[in-house]
Length: 214
Length: 311
Image 1 (cartoon, rainbow over the protein chains, first blue to last red):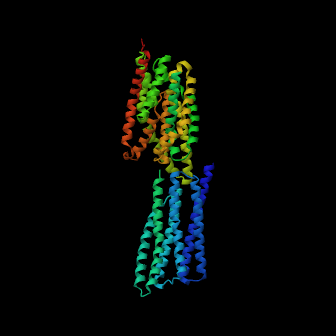
Image 2 (image 1 turned 120 degrees about the vertical axis):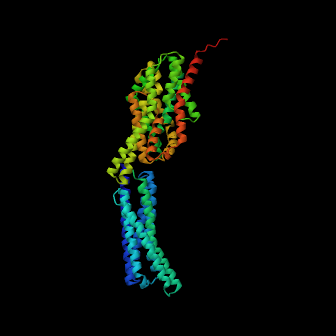
Image 3 (image 1 turned 45 degrees about the vertical axis):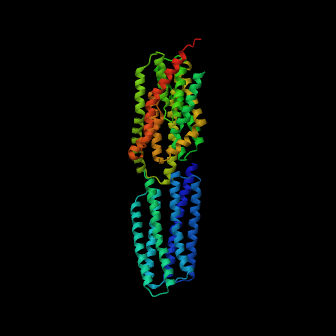
């Protein structure tokens, strides 16, 4: 009964973690849309703080899960896999915070020619992250549809790569200050790395699925 | 007294070594502490020996007519064989050592040997790994189908596997006591009675498990832990069922050969590349050599015990 209670706690913590991660993605999408529509203003700073808060909450819950797992919840062979998966996944909210922080701290003016592609990249990144969260839930609950989600993550990562290349080309075709171009390129690279990270986590999900399939 | 010490040593070494076959996978995978495992083994070995050990004791007791001298020499020779094979690092079956020693001493003493019983015993020895392979095949596919239909979440599956391994480990320890107690005290059943023989034998095996079981289990567990929890469960359950069946038939068999058969069964399902050929050859060598070595030692000691030294 004791073991069941401890595992139930881990299960609830994982559900909480995924819920916070989902919320972080939603606030991140809102903040990018806001800065593209309204530019840098006070509300954007509030949204940046909300992204930071969600990321920090996610960190706390992940830390709590790690402690529960070290206290011998689940089978040893599951513990390491679960921790690796969550630790890699936790880098996605970090990256989201990194993007909005870059815009806020460097006071980046996002040129109009990039708006559509930045919107599309953000949309795909958030969609990919939400699919990843669903895939993680599926692998834990042994529910169906995992393979389709993993394939979608792979496809979305390729789409984001194409958009990233297009945006970088567009940036360097402009007659702008080189320093500004590099800052914009860095922003595009950081934004596009969200789907790269999602794909990395999806690889761990695949390994977890194979190892725990009977 | 020497014979009883030999029997106690045999029971102790059996408990110390064969404990690893019952709970080694669960301990190796850190699902249960080694100390708790040996306590569970000790309890269930004694229960198994007392409840269902009599059939095996009667089979071994009836294999050859035993006098006090032949009983002592047989028991001591079996203990010596187990020690010798262990020093040579060859996998050894206590059951084969005991039967080999009884046979060797019986032939040297020109006693009547119950050949029909011997044929039955040898058939069971051949049947042990084969039975474990078959059990692991059937259990693997039945359990796999059940779990695929059930589709539990990892938070349900993991505790289920942990408890299943502990319960099957207890069952395996019960089967070990029921089956192997005959190896320890069957030769003395004529003197002390079958029921007393099962209780004393069970206590000796439990003593071995309690004193040295955890050390051997940690060593063996590290080798066995490469199996995932599901395969480990299949192996332990296959071993328990195989050994329990032979306990009911009344023939002591080797739990080491049982667990190796079960692991081989998993190897056949998952691909032969997982089977360690070198280890398999060593097991076969030990399997073939043990009864002959024990018979030789038994004959030698019995012959020496009859030599009269004249000044």
